[in-house]
Amino acid sequence: MEAAPTFDHAIHRVRSWTDQEYGLNLSAFMDEQPALFGFLLNLSEEFEDDEHDQLVRSALLLREGFRLAALRVTPITNLIIEDVTTGVVEAFEKLEEKEVEIDLDAVVALSRSPYVFAEVRNFLHQELRKGIPDTQLQKHNLMIVIDILIGCFEEALEIPDGPKAS
Image (cartoon, rainbow, N blue to C red; front, side, top):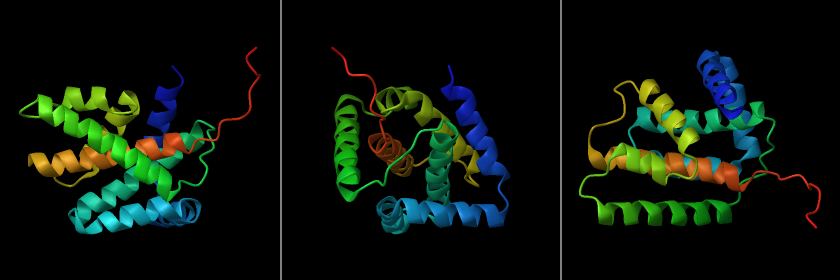
């Protein structure tokens, strides 16, 4: 499977960035994806500073992963963000109705891209100074945002015109 090494490589690249490289990549991300950056900025009040910083790093990780896989992501619109958010929140709500306590395997299986979701979640857990918070609500909200970010990138993929099916 080609996706696994590319994503591992993206994680390594993001972790090895100097402060200057991080700043340049953040600036490029803000220019390329202003609506998605605005969405993340609006979440700053919902999370502790460290958590919010790592959500932004997770978005940069996704950007790097798609870039290394040579997948072009078009600008993510507010409509894409709204549609993906609605879909993810509804899926999580259905899961909550079924289960008293949400278990990680169910969340991973529910996510739009289980492999990428698990990798970004692990990255986030390792990068957060205290790990992913134990409080169910906060952990749950972080996972929802991660799935939304993945969905936004996927929905904005540029699909080249391939051969027409007959």
